[in-house]
Amino acid sequence: MKILTDEELAEVLDREIFRKISTAADKLGVECYVVGGYVRDLFLERPSNDIDVVVVGSGIEVASELKRMLGRKARLSVFRNFGTAQVKFGDMEVEFVGARRESYSHDSRKPVVEDGTLEDDQNRRDFTINAMAVCLNAGRYGELVDPFDGIYDLEERTICTPLDPDITFSDDPLRMMRCIRFATQLNFMIEEETFEALERNADRIKIVSGERIKDELNKIMMTDTPSRGFVDLQRCGLLNIILPELAALDIVETKNGRSHKNNFYHTLEVLDNVCRRSDNLWLRWAALMHDIGKTRGKRWDAAQGWTFHNHNFIGAKMVPQTFRRLALPLDAKMKYVQKLVDLHMRPIVIADEVVTDSAVRRLMNDAGDDIDDLMTLCEADITSKNQVRKKCFLENFRVVREKLADLKEKDYKRMLQPCIDGNEIMEMFGLGPCREVGALKQALKDAVLDNRVPNEREPLMRLLMDKAREMRLV
Figure 1 (tube, rainbow, N blue to C red):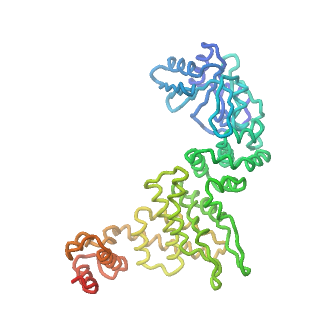
Figure 2: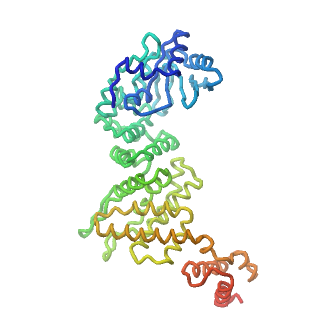
Figure 3: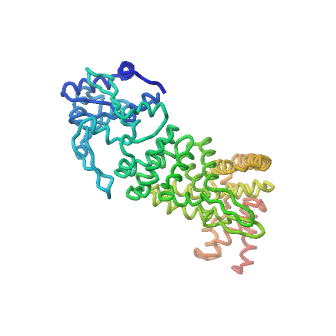
């Protein structure tokens, strides 16, 4: 982090867009400040093209004047219902709003808004590091206005609220998610009183829509180490409300001196492992959800100890309801996550035994185009502290990947899909869609996947007729 003087801030802000905003504000005789995340990121030396400007007066008027000055190079959008305007100029987006004062009712996070002063506007900000403002008027250009010592909290790498955190979070409970998201993104600590307020107000998150919660979760998911955020969500009680299926994994049971591992912390380790290898948001969601079925599938067996049979299948069935609750997409992205959760044990089972060609062919057939992502997830899932066992698994995974690469070179889709399809089978035996047709198709598929017959018409036809006679269809 770099501490900037007012003179240095003026130098950093010596750009065409800011100078023209300054000219527009002075022409209209209003105070004008760049605020929030853009100011924070100036000190953190994080590049940003999203600029928020507060005007003590009409933000729309300043935005309109700026558009007039920039001409056709800029695009103006006005949102009169909200008293805001946006100017797009090159790769920059500048949001203008009039300084305002807000008040809230207990059952809504939508405030009653009134015109206010800069002080009022800074008071309503979520965190001290987001409440700093830099004046753009010519007479005070570059002057930092920091009533809550946000610059000190930036130095200390601390998240805290400008006013009483209980009021801040109760007024707008989404700020609790933002608190944890900023701490995760910036690798900051949450100040103790602020964290205690998170715990006290966690239940207030219930008035926030799944859509808004989802947006914050996705931002946490796309950080370098999202486990930090999920640990904080669990510690303060928010996770049990927004993702109870994940929170439920945070338990270790012991019976007859035998314990199972904490599957919550295991899941977060898998998630971080995936993040080191991929920025695919939906692969990260698959990692987060891959073991959610373990709570429902957990059983005690006197001979084996704790078991989690079929947890992959159970977890896959849980994915749609979780996505629906959080307003996550119910399209191909959800089906992708569901597929990876369902299949995530398959490569591990293969790698725990002799890696056979038949098993690899079946895996590739079922995973299809998502096979590489599935392998990435499964390799991330190897978190054993037994280094010998871990090395053995990873070596076997290397063999699996080699066999997969060989199959890809040989055009696996052509090899693995029998050249006699269901329509031809129905026509041959005078059948409609039924269980018998499915059984015949599966017999052909199994024979091809197990490499018992080549995927050629003549040998497959002989096999088909033998199976049909066995089923008394001919």
